[in-house]
Every structure is written in structure tokens, then in C-alpha cells.
Image (cartoon, rainbow, N blue to C red; front, side):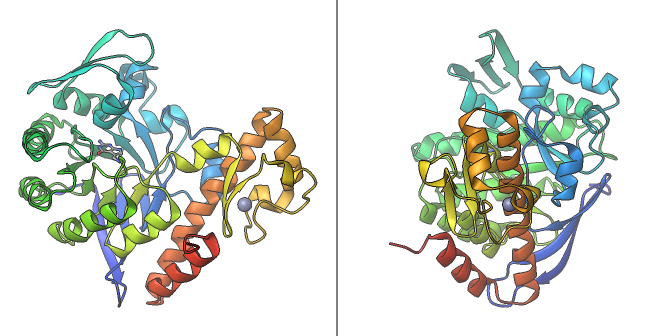
Length: 376
Ligand code: PRF
Ligand code: ZN
């Protein structure tokens, strides 16, 4: 493959775990890894301005092919000068391919070799997405990192189903690569599938690695399996991937899963979790989850997290934020979103420092102890 616009630079591996400290170089700048990517499905990270995202250290955001295709349309985004210009975000953007959204949002769908027939989650209109179409849309959006069109089967599908699905996902990946018209300015990642089956994960990884993508995602996790099962899949899957390319674990954002993913060699994560739970008043704090809507915080004039220096924690109290959330005030949702995003981005900053200091396992112990994961 000719020189990709996406490059990975490994800076250091942690002594006891092999966790990777590095950086990813894209046409819109370089960001440090491991990194958590905030999700901006509709060309906005809900409630946050680009300036606020930069302020909290978000080095890259994620957006969605499927949603932008439906509204406002990828042709319109292209006319606007591309997604970066359209949304006034001049740093890296990664777009998911639509594969996962089709499977999670559409209630009826029919998978064929050519692509997937399904119905719009907005108005029920019949739609069709193919590997080529997903790439064409992403070429129009102009994201720095694009994703192959894949099928994300449920974790507990029978072996034969997952095998057929993995083989199709490999053929789709190859078709996507052939359809990619902007190889100089956008990098396309392959997505490893295979549910919990080690040999199918291996087959998927080998197929994709032979196509020489500039990066690899691990898909098909955080879809109902246990935390231990996810760790087990990562234990055998990341070693199947080249060490000189980024590895991205899709749709994972629980704090302990982020740390466990990094320990198993993952560089990038995304999840709607921090922004989604924020909007109904749930915050992640160094002492675990805090449901600020609860009555116990009515007269609590401390910040959401006494160990946090985000804009919300520096300036507002639990009592005030609770009041805003109870009244459905958008400013309340902004403050909780700011805090939760800051929390995960800062967690990854601390994880990078722990890799630097070769004490990631102790960091995990201390973090999980304080968060309350080790209670039982
Ligand atoms: N494939 C794609 N996007 C995804 C996933 C996947 O498997 C997941 C799985 N958790 C989240 N987002 N294309
Ligand atoms: Zn905070």
C-alpha cells in the first residue's frame, strides 16, 4: 500500500503489561494515545462547543456515517467544505461506517452479499448501505479516519453464523478499500469481528492484516458479553494485530474497561456513555458514579467531584446542577457532559502517565478501589 495519511508512532510500552504509549498522526494533527474519543454523532458532541472540547483535551472526535447521510446528507457536508469546516472542528475526526448503526437502530434489516437493506430510524423509508456506499459517504464527509463497513453480530450467535459473517465482513473490507477514492487524505481502518471465537477472530485479523490497513478496530464487543469475556477476547485478539498500527476498541467507555483495554494493547476508544448518562444527571467521579438528580444532593454545595478541575467542578455545586437537571435546563446537561468528558479524557491522561512511569497495574488498583469496582 502506498504511504497512508494515518501513522502510528509507538513511544513506549509499559514494563509489566505491554500497554502502549504513542501518538497518531493525521492530516488534521497529532493526538496522544491511549485516547478516549468523544462521540459527535450528528456533527456535534451533544451540548459541547469545539472550543470546550479542545479546552478539555479532546484530541479527536467521532462522528457517524449513517446519521450524517440521512441528515443533513453527505453531499451537503461536502458542499460546506467537508465535516471539519461544516462543524468548525479543525482537529482529527473519525467516522464510523454505519454498519453498527444499521444493526443497532434499524428494526428490520436484510443482509445480502451486496449490502444491507433496512429502514430509516427516522421515518421508516427503505434504505440500502453497501461497503462502497459507506466509503463514498465518508469520502464526502472528509474524516481523517474512516471505518470499513462491517457486520457486528451479537456476541452469542452460533459459530456457523459468525463464521459466515466474518468472511463477508472481510469481503466487504476489501470492497471498501477498492472504493476508497481519497487515499492521500483519509485513512481507512479494518474492523476485526468474530464474537467470542478465537479462531474466527484470528481469521478476521489475518484477512484484514493481509489487506494492509493503516489501523485496525476491534468490533463486536460491548454488545452484551461480560467484562471478563471482553477481556478474554482482547487477550487473544490484540496480539494478532501489527504493532506498528493503531488499535481501536469500538464502543467502549466504562472506566474500568478503558483501563483493561489499554492493559491489553488498545490505543483508541469511543463511547456515547459519558454524554448519554450526563443528560439524565449521572456523573462519573473519582469515587464512582454520582446520580446528581438524587434528593441527597439537594443541599450539597460541593462540586460534582472534589478531585476534578473541569469547568463544571471549578464553578458549580451539586445542588445547583441537580436543580438545573430536575428542571430540564440545558445548562445542567452541559455541565454534567463537560464533567463526564473531562473525567474520561483526564483518566486517559493519567493512564498515559502510568505507562510512562511503568505503574499501570497499581494505577488500576487504586482507581478501581476508589471508583468502587472492587467492592464485592
Ligand atoms: N462495528 C462498527 N462500529 C461499532 C461497533 C462494531 O462492531 C461497535 C461494537 N461495540 C461499536 N461501534 N462499525
Ligand atoms: Zn468535573
